[in-house]
Length: 483
Image 1 (cartoon, helix red, strand yellow):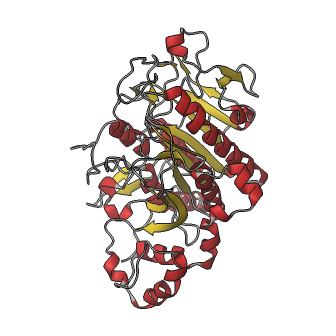
Image 2 (tube, rainbow, N blue to C red):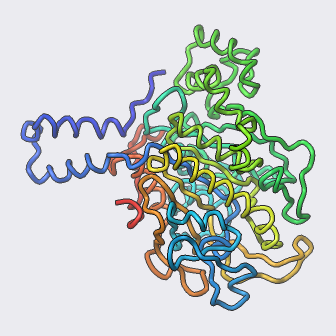
Image 3 (cartoon, rainbow, N blue to C red):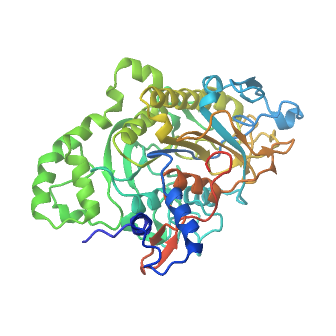
């Protein structure tokens, strides 16, 4: 199969050549077009080489993270107290001390909003950057007409820099403990062959989530690390539309890299692979990739820094991948909607969720900075929604202690690197932390920030299954973070 031409390349190159050659008149373009063409050329200059999109499935509570309300009544402010950050006048949750000490390296949006209080709807909006739900949306399963994920779009329109795919998701797909596969993380109307590459590093156990093993816990029972859960060198899942039988019965793409290398290299010489299969072979057969994935065997200092748990290993792998040339890495920190703190919220956040997130994200900031990569790597951290402004104190048979319910009307978003100024606070919430008070942002503006950082021009498109061009952008980048 001939690789599909990139619409990004198609839009960008001719305009640049035309301007350089002084061929405006020859092309029949008047002076009124020059400013637009120059703006397109400037718009296409990347602010970052890579993006790490940290996704907190379940919904991070804004009060218990980046938007505390210390002056609100107790039923609003909750049990935690704020602490000062390095940025004068800016406070965050007391259980994020490492990030507080690094606030000069990151910024936050306190006013992102969408209308959905249901998990699957929120995932669809935030993972695709599209607020309207797609036709025939099914909250229990992905559908062919779903909006494509941000990861799928980047993987399709951003050229690969080497043998690695432009976009990768790790350490696993988002799957609920009931077996429900969360929609919004796939290619949808782009077609399943353009699903993102999922590097499966974690053996999913339906009874466990969190940052296993140091911070493993069950949402109702508390601390728990059942046998059978593990973090390993990843296997590669090809897009659903690719038939693995074409590799031959002897080849198992989900096996260990060592056992596959020779078989894959031999098959690559005789089989008519398309671009997805070629990427898979290159990724699995390249000896340089083996060390890239062995994060649990990193040196002691690195492991101590990032944390010896799923959150730490995943972000260490993300750093290695962007350093190796991947344009977008989506890191799912907590499967099974780990951040869904309906009840037992305060002990779970204090003991099992905020400490490993604080440690690992802070380590990522430091590590990228020391390697000279922070300015060229945008970090985004968000969930599918926030939590209700009011704490629910009614005990039930599942949760003995209070928590907060789903709340799409407001969430806080963390951003760092990629040329974003440190210490900025974009937008504000009302006194209860329930709705935007000013400068409301949307999933579209967050997605546009990612696309703009990577240098996608506003005219960039992708093609659906009928080869119709579809716009990449559905909003403007967040003002104050990226021009």
